[in-house]
Length: 276
Image (cartoon, rainbow, N blue to C red):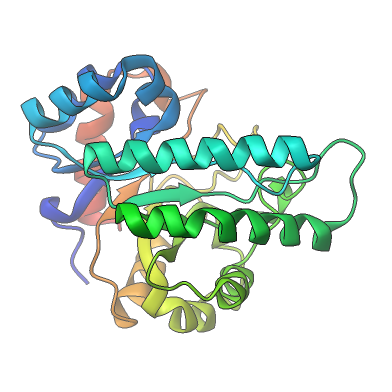
């Protein structure tokens, strides 16, 4: 199986957290990387107008904005605030011509232990914003996360659970799922779940799980440095019909965020052509 061709490569802005919004895009453009996913903090720092200019100037396409509001958490007022945040980010996607808004459910609030209630809260929140997303031409893409962050990031931890959630939502024209290999590599049911999720699969995120990982979120590895068989997962999603971008998403506080952005991107281009 051949590696990822450059025209399908996407590098998420979080992979270059050492860069500003425009500087990161310029780095991608220098290396011929055609796509990125926008990190909400970087967008808020630079503003929509400046972001649009930077995307236009570099000719790097933004395929997603990450993330919407986390609507599972807290009391009614907190959830309403997260719903409004999601609406604003839908608007940002529409203004920038971004097709997907990545969504996490959020975890459990302080003192909460009812996972089912949290999932129902998230479902209710999704239901309330689907009409706006549909009208704006923006797809809400649910991303399940590793169970170790269930308490504070996502009460949806498997691809199967994400499909169940979207079955309940019944809005496939305006929703979808993302598969992050870092979040789901451990699940022995993943090949089966990929086949089930295939019509809804819109994004593939790739990094690696370091055997000596030191942080629940911020210590991802470059593909090839850890335990994930990324090529096998890519083969499974492509056998199921996926032909979208392959997005490198590396939160790496102790390693890659300390390196030269050009060195990071060069390493990604080389490794994805050989290992993913």
